[in-house]
Structures are given as structure tokens and as C-alpha cells.
Image (cartoon, rainbow, N blue to C red; front, side, top):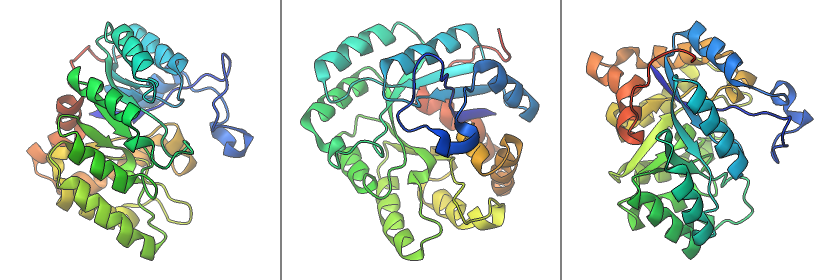
Length: 283
């Protein structure tokens, strides 16, 4: 199994704008040794590391971890998308590392509602596509899910990965209708993929039964060939331990055929990010 969505952060070198004491147990460093111990205990052999900060330093740190650990199969980093010249400079630097497979920007924390529509951002994303890199979109609903649909239509050459199913508002029935409409529209576009990850919602039990409507919606809209499993560690620990997080998702996937299950647990991530096996374990 490949976990398509795992974070690391180190509060020693620098702070993270979104992370503070209000986040309880998340407000500490999470490093590679603890990550591998957690993954190994759960039987996970490889991961895609995903940025947790809109800084070049975060990307550099993840690529350094990838260089030291064969279980890191890919890295989704950050570049200044709204500054195309600077973005291209960083792209040229990071492309030298085969683990660098995509880019993400914390759009939900960016005050600009139109970030994905900015001409400079579109320019940078076109450059991303030309290099065969993927663009991850986090926490898209409510501000950015519809705009992600338009982005996918406008740049069909760009592979877009919707993290956490776009953050469906499971506890809000009326908002769910709006999420579903945009989610379905995105799934209709062939250059899109979705991660079944980050689905712990305050006030909603983290169980297969509670998540069943989201799973059924995702499976019908995208199909297992465009879905991938993600643990969202350590953020997911606010809702459940890592093992329990995976247990619920694997329970939902139990209805899949062997080939469909392989897609969901591994093959979709390999295809989407262009991952290459680097061997299992810590180096």
C-alpha cells in the first residue's frame, strides 16, 4: 500500500503560519523516524510527502527526507505560483530530484478567493504541466472547488489532484448539495484524481458507516481508477490514530474487486505521480 498523503514538520527551524497551540497535539515536530515507525506498524511501505507550508524551505526539507529514506516515493512541494519567473527558477532546481512529483498551495489559507484564476498562477501551472508535474488542491470547498473545476477545464494538460475529496461538509446537509454538484462536475473531467483522505469531521464519528455516503459518492463519480488512499498523518490523529484511520478506509474498500483495490491502494498513486519503486524501509 502507498499512502498518498503524509506530512512532516519541524518546529525548530521555522514556524508554520497555520499551526499553533490551539491545535493541541499537532503543535510539535513530526519527523521521519516517528513517521516510519507509524507506517511500518500499519504495514505501509511507501508514501507521498505533501507540503505543510507555503515555503521553499518546506519543500527542501521534504526532498532531504526523501534522499535519506527509500519509503518516500514522491514529494508534493511548493513554489511561488503567483510569481512565474521565480516559480520556474524553483522548478528547475527541484526537478533535479526525482522525488519531486508535484506542487501544492494552501489555497484555503490564502485570502485571495481568485487565486486559481490569477493569470500569473495559470502561467505557472502551465509550466508545471509541461514538466509532467501534478497540482494538488487542498480543502477546496467552499471557496475553491468550483474554481478547481474551471481550472481543470481550462488546462486539460494539467493533472489535478483533489485532496480530501475537497473537504465535504458532512455535518451540513444543505452545504453538501453544493459540494456534491462541484465534486461531480470535477469528476467529469479526465485530468482529475481524488484522494480519499482527511475525512475526519468534528461532530461526526469517524466510522465506515458515517463515511459511507462520501465513499459511495466518490466511487460513483471517479471510480477506483481515479481514487487513492491517503492517511493525512499526523493531522488525522485529531480524529483517530493512524491505524484506525486506515482501518476505516480499508473497510470501505473491502467491496472492491482485487484489481480495483490495487488501484485504490497503490496503482492510482503510481500512475498519477509517476512514482518509481525505491525499496521499502528506512535507509
